[in-house]
Image: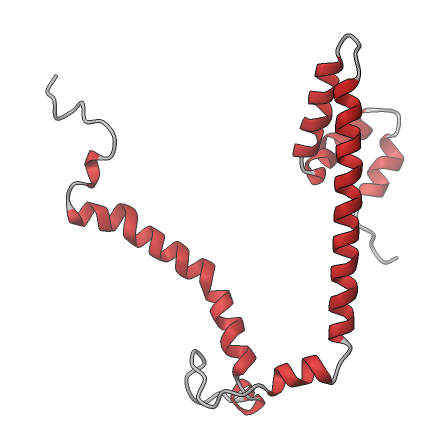
Length: 161
């Protein structure tokens, strides 16, 4: 075997053309796809209604920027109150959840019984599983059990009669 075939690491990126094809172009496409919606939201926020509804001109650029939409949102609607309520609920629920989790973690850690470590690990791992992924095995179990007809009916979309 030659040393050329035993290359290790990222030696395939030695040439500039390979670097562009395998690294820069895919990263550029990924960034464009990822950031374009934010750009669109930004330019749309500063466009006047006339530009938003017009089919003429360039849709990717703002010709007459305006702050009218922000003024309407902040001063003519109840948005600041809604934002405050949302933030209040978010902070309070986060604090309560964190407090409960800290107390529960302390209690679980202090427990001394056979399998306490595994029980704590199982509780921790349960938090890592997305709730949506748990619904698929449940539906399978329901169909395989005596609940076949009710579970099958509940999982089907309703149709108008």
